[in-house]
Amino acid sequence: MTPVHFSFTSAFVLGLMGLAFHRTHLLSALLCLEGMMLSLFIALALWALQFEATAFSTAPMLLLAFSACEASAGLALLVATARTHGTDRLQNLNLLQC
Image 1 (cartoon, rainbow, N blue to C red):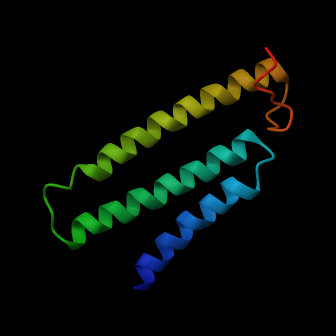
Image 2 (image 1 turned 180 degrees about the horizontal axis):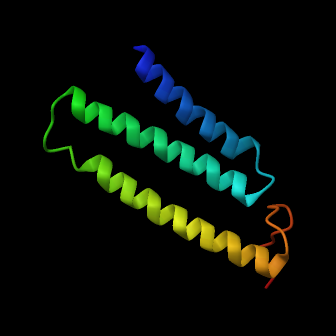
């Protein structure tokens, strides 16, 4: 495994571990998701450049567009949660309570 592959794999795994183990605030969960998407974007872009695959050159831009949509939806949920509950702590959120 090359050092470049190791760095992107470790960045993705660190984001996944942060999402799994450090779930106190909604903002920290969203930041972990964004870190995972950024590592996937860079790895996919370098993969397309390394193999000179012109058919896959649009895939990183499509992934970046989807991650921007995911970020905007996450921030909208964060604002709505902060307005209704007064905090973004995930322990205070109960999906069964209306």
